[in-house]
Image (cartoon, rainbow, N blue to C red; front, side, top):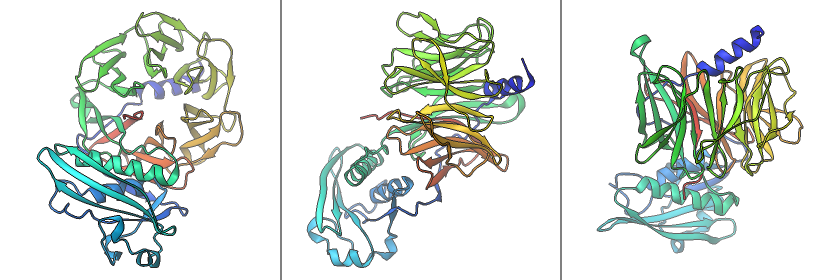
Length: 428
């Protein structure tokens, strides 16, 4: 194996996540110059609630990169329902849309009512009453954000989804690794697994109930499947050599993965029910990082068969592989957009390793991120954002960029480092 391939394989196999054990915080790093002006008025009656629902909605919309929220300090009026809205007031503030609402506590939880107003059209777009069980005000706020986002953009909102990520803290023999699941905004993190051995490559099942991941707890890599809510798990593979990069098929019945049990790392597909294993690639190169197309017909993977890491596509049943990327000498970790028309990847430019986008049928590769040490991109289920791991100043954290590259935010941890993000599918 040539030197470049050895170095690349080392990076692919040992790129381990590091971490934080609490919620991640949001920092907007770049806003879009095409963001729509919107106002989210504090909900009447919500003072003193455990969560500020309107603030969560405002933060969600701003984080999407598609909206520029009006500061609360600039609000001359604070209406709570559609009939209270004075359209002229909000037009004078250059506000195009307005969210108003009211909240009250009930015996079993809370009740929220909201209206979305089109200021320029002087009309009510949508309105709904949301009943909240227990203290799940944050979940209800994300739901409202989803409804507002879809009503304005005609794109399904993804604020009620989750992210999984790997953490690690400590030094040397005292390293501790964790697998966490949190809201898409980094809040309400929950530990799924902890270990004194590396954890990597989490991947969500299509129904959002399970995670597949790689753990070194048996002192060699093995792939596990774990139920997120119950913690119950099974070991999917533990062959000699590499067991890595699990990826669920869209029907949830199979896992693509990279195994070296027969020599060089190749792409295999495991039928989870029957435990049958199908080898898709057979070459002297390193084949890894598989990803299924949304229709389940094709699989992307990274291979150095052309002399350096590039992305290839082949039928999910095997056969010839077609090279997809030609810009530069390093393109890896390809992931399909939800519509299957584009792929997102890590591209090495003269600035470093960055998140990029390319059409599946060819075309120009477009760099999206401004950081220079990016890895592990994962696409939101509505295709609007890409979350990834990056490093700056010796610290690792998660960051996200919009699919058009116009806006970005990051999710740093209070302590430690974070790696290997995986965005969940839609959960409702």
